[in-house]
Amino acid sequence: MRRRGRPESAPPRADPGIRGDPRVRFVLTVGLYGLGLLSLRGRDAWLADLLRPLDLATAWAIEALLRLAEFPVERQGWVLAHPEGFSYQLYYPCVGLTLLALLWLGLWALPGPMRVKVPAGAVGSIVILAVNPFRLALLFWIGVRHPEVFYFFHEGVFQAIMLGMVVVTWFVGLRAAVPPSEAPAAVPSEAR
Image (cartoon, one colour):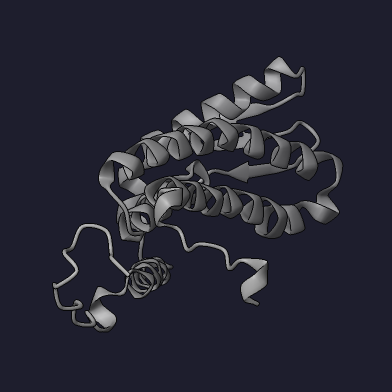
């Protein structure tokens, strides 16, 4: 059987080992990113100060969305408050930067050409940045109207949705990077 791109007489390539396996590269890259985030916990005041303008911009966007929906909100810096007492403070993970970093690192670690990864990352970034203020405005509404489920939605539901958007972008990028002609062929039913 002839392989694409190599003459029939060429010797088979040597196994690149664990370092050349794209799946291992992907898992290691995303895993090291996660460890990096964990190592910042409690020691990230310098990063929070650096990214404070993004917190302010996000707070402004959320305030605008809530006012557009005629929902009462007061903003002081990066803190949003409701007249009935509920409030939350925006912090740099809220603005979606950690998700964007995870998105781009994952795309970089996946196999495939950059000409496919960059558009996938750009579209994924736009979607995440566009959805995030709506997510935070809805989270504020939940905190005011249903405070008993606020943490469930904050730590569970919305985190899963946003992470799911990153994973979907990875799969779309991977699918676009590996053309159908290179995908494994299905086994004919007679050969089974």
